[in-house]
Length: 362
Ligand code: SF4
Image 1 (cartoon, protein in one colour):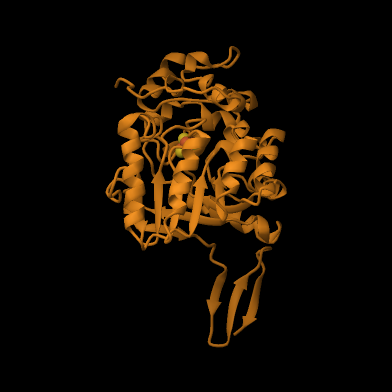
Image 2 (cartoon, protein in one colour; image 1 turned 180 degrees about the vertical axis):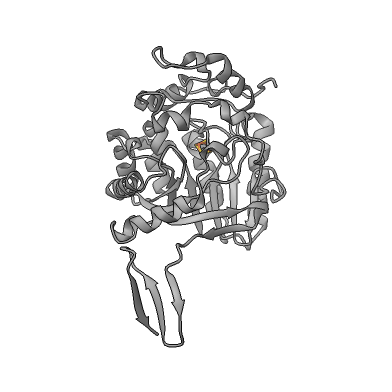
């Protein structure tokens, strides 16, 4: 299949350090640094189906072909071997009243303002969309954003808007400012969240100018996406610090990924380090059954074991909620290890973090 998707540097009009990073991102396996052992022909076939993009910054963090960061960034032939999963398992398309909005829960919408990212993560749940023709450049795309804003304006039951994509922070600061300022004129919109992975994949995007602009729109919540402790660097720490100092609350939505972070010690270290850089672990997502990502999906018991291991050993502040998202758009459900072992009218028997069974009076 021919890859008709745009490369990000085809649409750049301004130049700033972060845009240069995106412009210099590698978009084909042949551009991987010499010294890595790759089958360029096989991986190029993968990129015709699922595009590749890695920012120079994230590329610089990768040490070898077994690196958990490599696994998140570099195409894998197993992406084309996945025959069991679906392109859109969460039925986002049928729940899109207009192309840029997903309206699943009554009071909340996801507003897709960008299809671009600083990295095309191999495990992305919106793998079908990232790298497609931009929503936000050219007349056709501006129209989609305008339609989205009009939809939100006319639905007064919507009190929360999540800017997502792609990555909203791949928009220019002025364009994002315009979207946020318009949303702020809708009285029924009380909470605005931005979902961005740039804190991890392109921390230089967090410029002083951007922070000054975002600061105008408090209360504002940013959820980011770190999956491994090695992604927490001086640069990403600084980016989080700037936002936190501006009073913006930061949370993290980590994805449990086989071969990347499906280990209790790695996960515990990640959660602790996140809290150190002022990012509250929010969700640990079990990966959705998205086409091209089957090789990342661990057994659900791996997630339960990790959650059990963290409970009691880490600060309660470090513990995210372990979540699944039901196929067909039925919504998110928290997954809890089964701590209650038996019940009687006056007592329940529960298992503590050490595996000891204790009585609890009712
Ligand atoms: S940054 Fe987010 S939207 Fe973009 S590819 Fe990665 S996970 Fe998907």
